[in-house]
Image 1 (cartoon, rainbow, N blue to C red):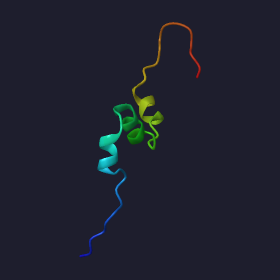
Image 2 (image 1 turned 90 degrees about the vertical axis):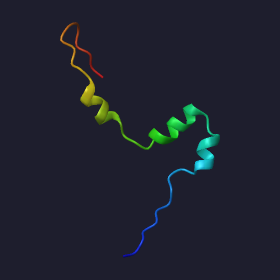
Image 3 (image 1 turned 90 degrees about the horizontal axis):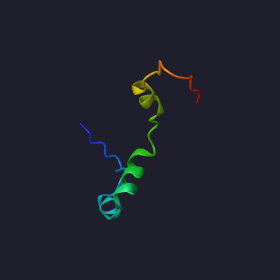
Length: 52
């Protein structure tokens, strides 16, 4: 069986040097989170309708 090696997404040394806000931005920026957030948003039943 052969071993497949993949390049790492992040270098550990670089991640240790980044500030916490930049770390989160680097982790989550490639992900499309809009569909996931839409699953958890509740429809408003009171008040004027809101369009986005």
